[in-house]
Image 1 (cartoon, rainbow, N blue to C red):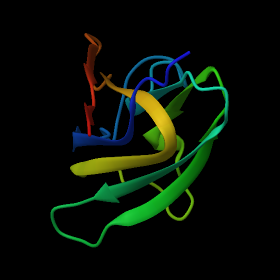
Image 2: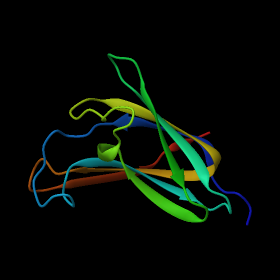
Image 3: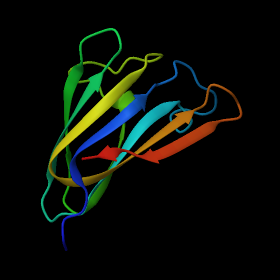
Image 4: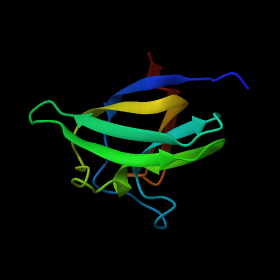
Length: 123
């Protein structure tokens, strides 16, 4: 199969609400990047976060296995530091293999939850 995707992706909008309603962990407010690696080789991925008022955080390192998808909750990233809640940020995702990236947010601060998704910007 011909490689699909890009090696660099940008999610310009990121925000993890500090609170949520509903059962944990399913209804915890979160940001997720869904990564598809359709290549026959594992992809080494680094995520760097950028903020309005402080130095960047990261890189957060992970692997997306060959011919698999991986959904990464930003809430669960904690090395080299935990992703802050209640803070605007943007993320840059760099991979050594072409990937497809999709961004999803669940905002469960109210009982009427909001779910948003979009394809990240790939270059």
